[in-house]
Amino acid sequence: MKGVVLAGGAGSRLRPITFAMSKQLVPVANQPILFYGLRDLAEAGITEVAIIISPETGQEIKDAVGDGSKFGIKPEFILQQSPDGLAHALQLAMPFADGDSVLMYLGDNLVRQGVADVVRDFEEHQPNAQILLAEVPNPSAFGVAQLDEDGHVYQLIEKPENPPTNLALVGVYLFDATVQEALDAIEPSHRGELEITDAIQYMIDSGRRVRASMIGGWWKDTGKKEDLLHASELVLETLRTSLKGEVIDCRLRGEVQVGLGSKLVDCDIIGPVVIGAGVEIERSTIGPNTTIGDGCRITDAVVRKSILMEEVELSQWRLRDSLIGRRASIGGSAPPAFVELTIGDRSEIIG
Image (cartoon, rainbow, N blue to C red; front, top):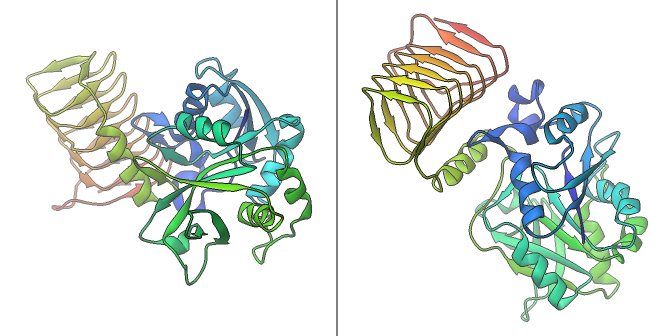
């Protein structure tokens, strides 16, 4: 089996962060979202991986992934010139698949259980396609599945206005080579895209076996800020304390990680918290559910339930539920209450 990871897309719902970076490289617990999926594939024994990239952010993705050795994969980068749909992206990867089965993984999704179990299930039962499902409170935001009394998939609908079920398709799909016929047959949807749900529906209508399994553990599509912050909380729950930097006259509660070369002085750290390398924090309260990127400088501030990317400078402000881009600067006279911010790279706020 080979992997196909989608790492294109504009990330419009995460703007202004994604004006300057790929949505798949936004960090969760100081690791780009994309990296979790690549490691999931390697752990499932899938080492040959096509990564679908866009013209706008493709080079950034290439630079981040490199030769793939740090994940245990051998990547091949395939350019999708325009965002013409998930099925179009898979179609571009079919020559790479070369007749093998494929697992398609959406690069901005996080799957707590990984994909090893579903790969084993697919190989054991040998359906033509297999989808993962999760019960969600807002099914109109996803592709949804309808199952018959025996649990077999009989209909898929992409982002329905009036969803018939709350069973959303998780961003992991498995196919054998018969998917090629479906990819060749479908037409663009009303959105102008080749929908993966239409391809799977074609397989169902053609008598192919499409298997569904419910996801164990949590799954997050991180396309929106609130989902990204929630995903960060879920990942941070798995932390174990590791203090590699200096921690001087600080009060620590819960699980806390501090990176090499970091220095914390007279701080309250309320885990779970991840603090990267080369960070300096003085007289501040950090956490819970907070990630501080490498090289940040924080003084006399409070940060809760937030993600600060690399080299952010923060002084005196009180932030919560915030997403702060790389090398942003926030300081000066601060509001008296907590502030919720989403600002992009190199932004500057002076109170």
